[in-house]
Image (cartoon, rainbow, N blue to C red; front, side, top):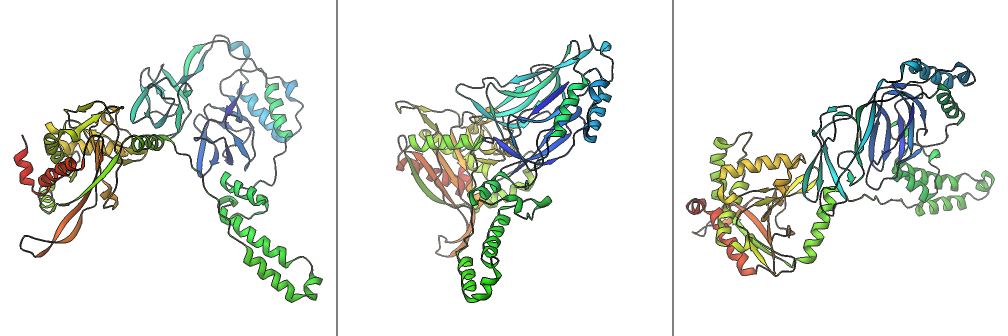
Length: 541
């Protein structure tokens, strides 16, 4: 049977895309997962695969045209469908391309209809994304754990999706073959909407559509002339051309296959202005050369380079982070406290230990020392490890020191936390940091690792910053930003200048719960443990 392929959602807010290149032509036989077309959204090139094997009967767009999301992109004669070949119904086509298409379709459907009834076939079922959290209407597709065409078992993990800082794994509903994955990595999937399609075995009578249908479809395709004069350009470039009232077909593109860029439009506009001044009437130019020259100069001076703003939707983890940060700032009165740490002795201690204790599973960085010393200081100042309820009537002192670390992952900012730092050794903390860092950077952090944090560390120094004003990770009451480690001159006890390893740290506290004196005393104790590692050793239990 002939089936239309409906162009799925290919990006948040994207309702159309440009057909950059057909990778097949009408009449071609394609296999499942074979690339069919390249389409361009605004600055994103997407390759569309074939969900089914079969014969391509119709391409609904010409190269360079704008394809609509949720509209047919192409039609395919599904491989294995049984149809009756009727020579009389296919004798009429006049175009050579139409005859070729019908001949290829007829080859696929030559099996007698009498053999069709009772044959095993497959039915395609859509898996609707269920409710995965109260009030959640969408989630980000972090990673597909299968590919189109894979055979899966019931309850086999299919995909990882990210809700509001929680990673959820979606299982297979039945045993079968993955027919279609409706989203790409990084896109937002809608709750109660199809997430993927799966082929499951069923027994039913085969369809008995005739080749006449295919012939008429192909005939219509051949009768529709391809639109001419279309330029190869992204939607953003097209918008720029429309705003300047420029016909893109007249612009020479400098990109691959003649693709038109914004710079080409700007160049065309400038050339057009010059030509409009210089070319009109040779006789007039001869009569008044000086006047024409002055006009050219004036026109050239008036040409202003047109620049078009780029609009990019905020989505996925970035959208979640934006909402949480707005809520944190609008509901928590932040105050900032900064201090300078001299980490010269700690750096020397870590350098002497890292060769012996570092491995593929354990990276002995500075962070384990920061976390363990922070946990020791939290034992003396439990209010820093507390949480306040929404209306600020109750304060809960958390018994566990679950210290989070902000990680710039490929899906956005994630804050996994190391559980029960108060009960772990420095090497155990280092092993957990290594594990969570690798998981976060690949976007595959488990939900349990993102929940129940009690205080957070943001290491801005890894990117070169020194001082910051971090936003509290609600419902926590404090967060610290670590600046970069710098070699700076400082006076020693004898009044001599020497090189020291200096780091700036910046605290943000919830002023409803913590006052400046409390966070200063807490920070001084934490500083003591880090500047004098032997003090940290003595404080451990």
